[in-house]
Length: 211
Image 1 (cartoon, rainbow, N blue to C red):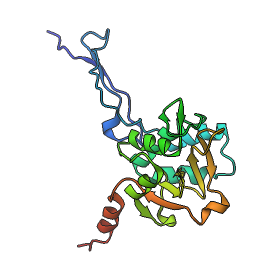
Image 2 (cartoon, one colour):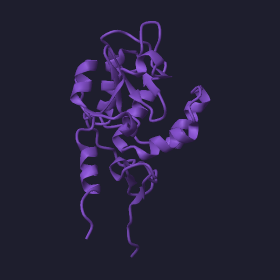
Image 3 (tube, rainbow, N blue to C red):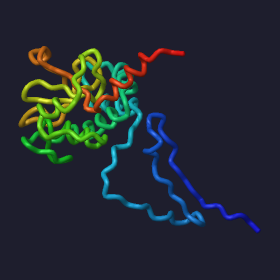
Image 4 (cartoon, rainbow, N blue to C red):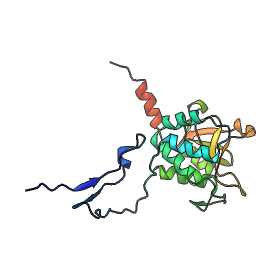
């Protein structure tokens, strides 16, 4: 008597994707129509793509003088939350600016973009720029990673991890775009990590005695 085995297929994981974000399995009894998937009202974080693939698409759009190899290295070394938030923000490039708005595909103001992008990665931020900065943990410029918030009074952005490169929704008449911290704002810019104290824990673990 033949042994029955379901016909199951699962998409192979990306080397940059956590196991929890694997594509759902599709199984059928006879190789025909797959079993229905369960639906959920909970918004899931965006699937994490390879930083190299994301950068490749950015190069096609044009990213100015940003060094591509440095960008890939910066994104590969940041945590998955930071990658997810950045990819969410980058998916909105070209969406126009509108004050007091957080509407993906329609319009964003500066804090609307950063709050929405980090919410896609599972991090809840307050609505306005100063409140977002105060909610996050301030870090030194040299310790900032891709996805971190970049703030100066009246504006907030997301750091791309290289030089002064950022993504933001700057002002009326423009939209979500990749740019750089302006020279006149550079001295005022402050960086912050929205992911609570995870980096502090990493530093503490690194300082533990061995043996």
